Amino acid sequence: MDVNISSYTQSSGYYNSYKGLKKIEKKVIKKYFKGKVLDLGCGCGRTTVHLDKMGLNVIGVDIIPDMIKIAKKKYPSIKFFSMDACKLAFKDKSVDTVFFSYNGIDYIHPEVNRIKALKEVERVLKDGGLFIYSSHNPWALPFTFRPKFLLRNILRGTLFSRYKWDKESFGELYTYYGSPSKQRSLIESTTSLRFIEMVRNGFRDVYPHYIFVKPEGKK
Image (cartoon, rainbow, N blue to C red; front, side, top):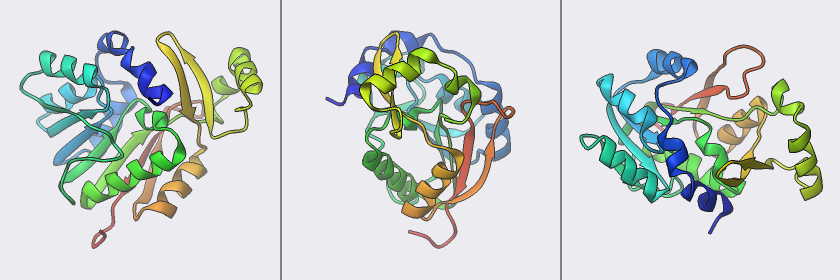
């Protein structure tokens, strides 16, 4: 089993305690969200329930079955599915907005699988549909002054790798750290999605949100 999936399988209780939307999430939701929404990496339904309350037609998806079980129990009126973002069981051009919140895409490992997930997002989006996600920013100052983080990755030989070795209370994780320019080039070189803007709370925002659109007439 992938180390990230293994660790997140142990984290259901941890993420079940998370509630409410973050300030930056409220900002991008108000500005961009529309129509049918696919909430990828929904965990225990933190973001999904609020999107539902806003009147959006939302479906929550996560690869961890235990999290989906919790979400279904807490919010029985909302549709939740346990599903791999690299192989979505939805029809082509079937959703208006895909949201991958709280840096969930950064735990799809290795990068070849991240690209598979991006292609699936492209496939299920309608023409003119939006892909909105947050991701770790390696240039944000809080990341560059973490002695234990730096030492851990020096010892593991991952300091200069795209995926860094992180440690959480529920387990160890390979985490993707891509600069804003890398985020854009990876998506635009592997899919038809095109960059709109990066939304962040100031220069030091460690988790900026990226907005991409699927142009009209694309696959």
